[in-house]
Image (cartoon, rainbow, N blue to C red; front, side, top):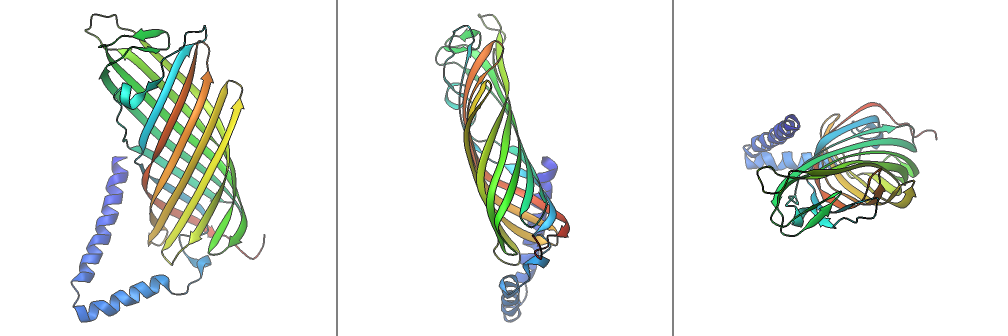
Length: 305
């Protein structure tokens, strides 16, 4: 991820240096130049020839800076109910975090597209408990020092069909699924009067969803993508609900390379039953994104369906 940040920073510095060079041009020469650049970005253009738009493939990678709100409850299947825990308030997890994100988009045809997304987030904390907590098969007493972890990977696949398909805009429906790979645990830290013990609960939750999406060319170098998804469904021992959304503004830096900035929200509510334990997770995961995108492959044809 560090390499990615360095890459993005270098890209932005290059843009800044270019702007500084322009600023050093005498005023009488600079104003016509700026006017020409501005008019070039917003003048008439052929959207089907833009190097960043409507290409067969697009790869995006970057960082997600979410604010987390997390509640969890883990009990046993023999009737011992766990304590509802707020990870940020009760266990000292930071609300803000940095997550890796990546996407791959395949434009199958004028109206069809297939998208893949991946998010990864690992969180840990150490806290002296201010109240008694029952988690899994153990009860953790007041003033006990504990270490907790919350590790999640989210994978998504979605198929989109465009009911509106024009060179400068497309809009349609999405159908897909988010899959949560979740592992959460708690353990007593060593060197205390109480014995050292620990509990963990992990589950995989496939959460289908349906939604709407839109992709717009705003100008020669600017694009906008939006989507929103929702579904509540029970599958075997997993009962879940998902609400997700994304808004992303794209700026084309050079040919096939672009930078994107946006805001993404992932909100889950899951009840899961495993062999010995059962759990409840309510997690809001919302914040800004910053990423780099690269498009390749031929342009999509609008001459046929």
